[in-house]
Length: 260
Image 1 (cartoon, rainbow, N blue to C red):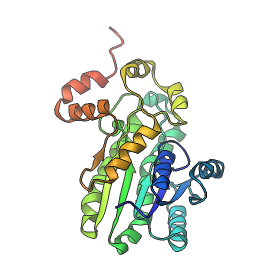
Image 2 (image 1 turned 60 degrees about the vertical axis):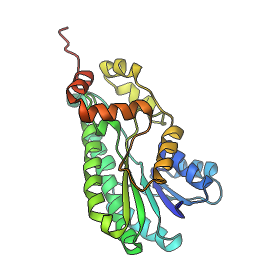
Image 3 (image 1 turned 180 degrees about the vertical axis):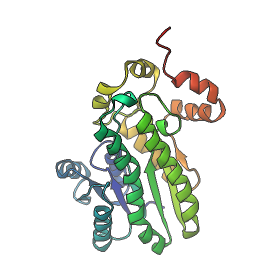
Image 4 (image 1 turned 90 degrees about the horizontal axis):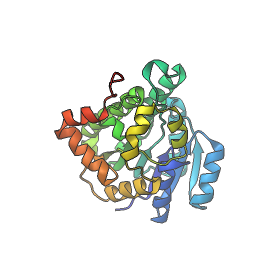
């Protein structure tokens, strides 16, 4: 069954907006949420008159609780909650700005937890619903240059796995989206900070569009089974290798020896 009502956190651009567009096209009542009023206004132009928006900072549990409570009263309890809010600031660990270290943890991991804490009582009372969190391929295998980002995305998977086991008795489904490099608005900015070795290694890695990632997720929503949602054939093959060939993956992902 298609969702009647969906809240998409981080839905003003990138993967979140692409997901919202597909849900609107399918007849779902969609609310997009993000910090930027300007980006939300632009998103509503693309989504059409039936979509709604709400500005909220996912790093504040009080703000997310208030936003969700208001939307439940105005729009209704969502059948689907997707949270894609997050960002990456690559770089060598000892060179990362302090504000980005704490910012990635606060946005990517605590932001995900805050969203789930806010919506869970409503879904539990309804006895149904699907929660989609967003990790990354960097949440399946640690990549040098992404130490803190990988930590937050590994955390999202661990959190979501435990959550899935906790909420299953209430009829709630949990899925984790693990996209590879995706051409989101922040991707070019991210490339400016990537270590040279990472940029060189990524020359052979497929980069997807938000539309491709969103299409994969929407198809996965039609299947109750399946926890990890990995878009892209190359990424799915990599996920198998990460699980079954860890030594091979380690050689492929580790930092080259500068002495060679």
